[in-house]
Length: 598
Image 1 (cartoon, rainbow, N blue to C red):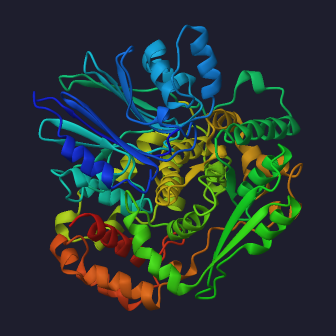
Image 2 (tube, rainbow, N blue to C red):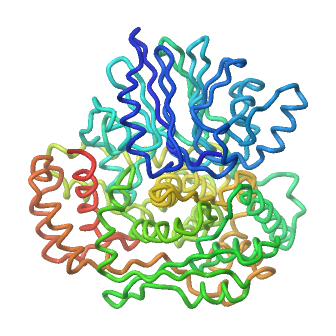
């Protein structure tokens, strides 16, 4: 397994691939893969790889990996948790292996099954497989979009990379802001759904997608996985207790799957239900002296900055090797700009810097951790799901109105009021996109439709992306057991009432009582608190003001000066329905653009 960075160029104009550009792209991802680097080129194709050694630490597993006998080359970022089982199956079919990792399994699985190979993989992955004879390239992203893959078209070529800044380093990219993406950003608390990114010249491959690119540039894509958010006939006789047991058993399998590594595996322990349950199940599976890590911040604006009381309780209960990281305001500020520099796209959530600092600490001890992201979207833990239950099952318009009222940061009119006239749109692309998603078949109720949207879109481009970017900035691999695709399929079939029970995540909470202390389960819901960024004052406020007054911001001309000055005059007065700070949202976008787009 290579938890890493990948990059490449596919040319369609008869010229040789620009190896120098691909090397520049790879160089920006050194921190994603500090243990090695490689480049391979053949005619119109060039591939590059940065390696973090986690499975098969030998050079036999180095990438780009080429199998001359099969006529294939691959660059792979991720982990196939069932690679040993697949290897045995492939060996039985006559394949011979020269390495002991999962990258070669990916390559030979493609040779045997073609693009259907993805159906066999349990894991997180983004990869590019090249057929050296035909010039065909296959780009793939995992089912839940845990591993990123960005694309750009430049002068007769398609380039791809694990990060957006890597593509910028290659040169020739249209780095102007996409006005539709800007509308999404300002409506969905920084989420820009695929294929768009905030930049007009860069797109991203959607999760659960295979993109086949022929040597002449023609391409076709297909979605290979979509869980059904409907009740299944085989589950009709299940009691509440049956569902709890099924969820616990699926999570138990998921957590144990994610122990596959040739290095130790720890846990990011927030003290909330989700990460605490991961720790409990790992302890149950015999992981003694498990390394766990928690982070906390200085209080600000009357808000507490840590949840150590709960993480300490879990650490004591399961006798973990616990590490507590306390961050003061000076260290937070010192790392803020570095965290923004590590973002592939602007991420407004305050806990990005928290994860960045936590990952820095954890990387001194480990290369692999498990984390609790995804449970709220999969098991209905957020406060905007209960209002959806009041909407009639067949009322698609009512579903959209209910979701927008509790989830959107602001109306399209309010978005326009923040923007200079040339950036305003005469339509509402965000409401249209969300409405189209909610109207798709395959989800039985309004709650099901909201959960499907959040699992497929909002989760991928907010918490999942945040965890990937901030941990990989320190060469740390984060695995997310709540996003095991079999667990997600089970949760999608579970009746919404069981998920909404108990203030949200009811079925998970009841299952958890068999494993972890009740104090963690029955506590008020917490969030990763970074008070200094949710309550802007002092140095964070100065940083935002400087960014919005910077000549680059004025040249770009995104935001109406009157709106900016009103926000700066009262920096904590305007909050979104989800508690986000409007000034931070605007300032973060400019800070990101100034860091990445000269």
